[in-house]
Image (tube, rainbow, N blue to C red; front, side, top):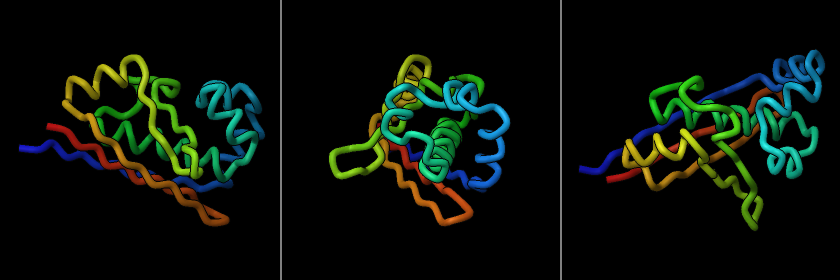
Amino acid sequence: MPNLRTGVDLIEIDRFTTAYQRYQHRLLQRLFTPTELAENGENMASLAARFAAKEAVAKAFGTGIGHITWHEIEICRGRAGEPILHLHGAARRLAAEQHLNTWSLSLSHSQNHAIAFVVAMGD
């Protein structure tokens, strides 16, 4: 029987921006990999959507953040600008343990909110 997991997260962009204004680059370096930062700069809407994606991936795992770190879930851009998920370290091991080998994610944002939806499948 196939294994199917989903995760979704919604964040207010203003709330994310407020956290950034308070902690500046320390926040960004804690949450994002160098590749994510290079691809998105300080675009708060894009970074908020990627933060939501990391939360959604953790929810799909059923663990939340804590068992895995922010840097072990990486959201990069594909050739057409589509979000691509890369798992590292404990997140990669957890995916293998849960037999999750196919991931799909969608990111979107309005002026006020960013949302991420994640689907994971395996056998």
